Amino acid sequence: MKLPFAAVAACLVCLIIGPVSAQTSPPAAPAAPTGAVPVPATKRVTCLGTTQNLKGQDKRDQLQLCLAQARLDCLKQAIDQKIVGEARKNFIKSCLGGDGAEQE
Image 1 (cartoon, rainbow, N blue to C red):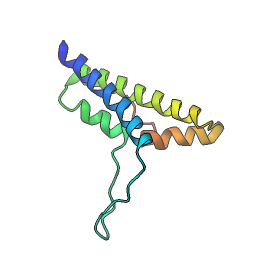
Image 2 (cartoon, rainbow, N blue to C red; image 1 turned 90 degrees about the vertical axis):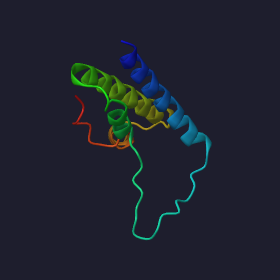
Image 3 (cartoon, rainbow, N blue to C red; image 1 turned 180 degrees about the vertical axis):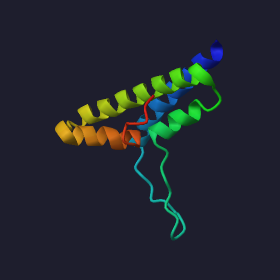
Image 4 (cartoon, one colour; image 1 turned 60 degrees about the horizontal axis):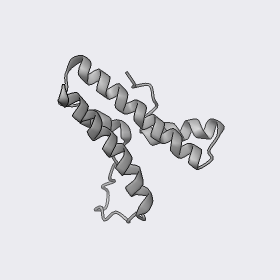
């Protein structure tokens, strides 16, 4: 029973530390070779990665919790930035990294 709790704890730590570190350090210019565009890991991808070792209902439950926490974090960012209306909806979608239809 400690594995699911550990997965949730790890997910929450990643979701808390990620936005904080992104806000405190200025973005660095990527040194990617010409033609290669780096794809940033989205919160949705992070959630999928943290649940990849789980199976069945445990995986679905942990993924749903992780995505709910990620959406809440995005909503908090939108509120802090005073984004409202359709712009908020679009911001949350882009913040999560998808159209939101993939949530289980």
